[in-house]
Image (tube, rainbow, N blue to C red; front, side, top):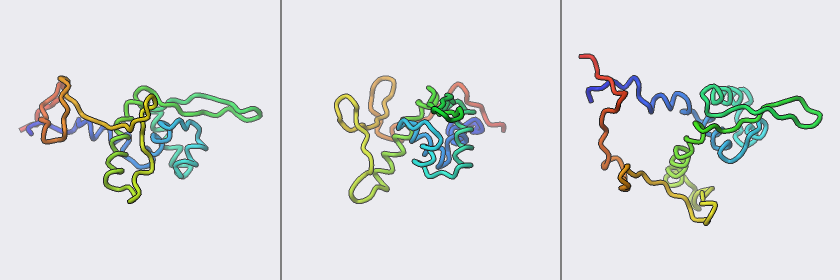
Length: 153
């Protein structure tokens, strides 16, 4: 392709979330875990690592800090997903489904996501704007977008 890739959206996204502990923090945030100690217990992340990941997610606008105070304790922050953070949910679900398909124990996946209203399992699909289901990369054609930049000769 005669276009530069230095503004690649995949690379820019991975610069923010492309690390194991970051995804585990996001997994817990999507499960409703908000407090540092709970996140540490659920992820097993070392304190310094977790602190750095939370700070980065706040800095990037995926989480926001909300102060709280337990009776008799000092004020602390809990971490809540922003709209920008919630928009990563399909990415985490796609990673989970891939892992379920290729890496799960013989008994099956450890967690199955279900629709809260009816209880049916959740499945992800790609669709074009016209509503056609897209089965995979062989049915997709990359074309230059508005931000495409030509390579210098």
